Amino acid sequence: MRKARKLGLALGGGGARGFAHIGVLKVLERENIKPDIIVGTSIGSIVGGALASGMTVDELEERADAFLGSDIYTSSELKAMGDAESGAEQRMSRRIQTYFRTKIRLAQALFRPGILPGKDMEEFINFFVPDIQTEQTVIPFAAVATDLKSGESVLLKKGSLRHSILASASVPGSIPPVDIDGRQLADGAIVCTVPARYAVEQGADVVIAVAIDKDIVLSSELQTAVDIYVRAGEIMGFHLEQYDLKNADLIIRPELGSIHWTDFSQSKRLIALGEAATLDSLPELRRLAKSLSRGALMDRVRRSVKGLFVRRPSGTG
Image 1 (cartoon, rainbow, N blue to C red):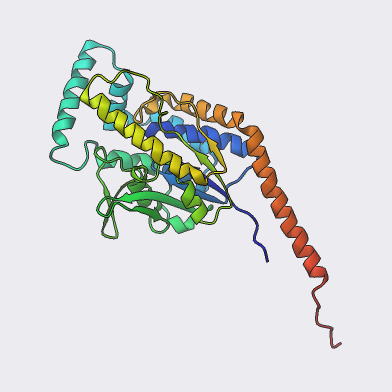
Image 2: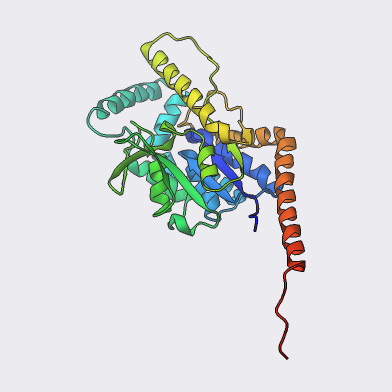
């Protein structure tokens, strides 16, 4: 018997930019397009894990709003870094504080595995994701992480959902790696920025991929060693992403500009940009949905026709 075709959703990494995923999900929900499989990298694993666990898109958006006003965020180092990167702190006193915070973070990087406390990311994940096992999700789900010792990508399909997502979202240098089964695991985006190939591996016949990383277009001059180092990382990430996206049937890429990965303050704008990009892709999206529906209908017809010719045992009275 031929199996019904499955839709996979591959959500990419990009820090705070991942709130754009929520905008994408809003349009998918309105179109009644429901994924059968979800795979996420980094922030994509947080949003994907929350959806897979049974949270509605409206609840996800409400959580995003509530998170920005929570003590968990307002008192975190994550917010302080986001403010510094976004230029939100304008007063001279704030700029001085930001300068010294940056120097302290750089010094801390010499003596510990991450410049941000691991608890900041843990609390962020706990705010969105329930304390369940990955095998218990309503929609089959997997998170992609990177084994720092072997250099291999690791697909996390079992065990604590929160712990797996923490490993997938542990940005190297910023957040300490996570130990799972003796492996030191970090951000999946090191080796897989948008996990379309893993969605296929998990059984998806059609894959919608959402890419939220920065565009390759150069927006400023390369004046310092840091500029060049960051640019090199962007180029490597771009070419890695092209490889990852070869397995996608539809790629949704919101235009997020230069919004920094720590700048969660722009959540509403990010969600709106994700929604706008998906609306632009509606014709292709509807064609994909129609092909899945047509495949499912043909499967039902084949089963019905086959049933007409199945010889049933006669009763003995």
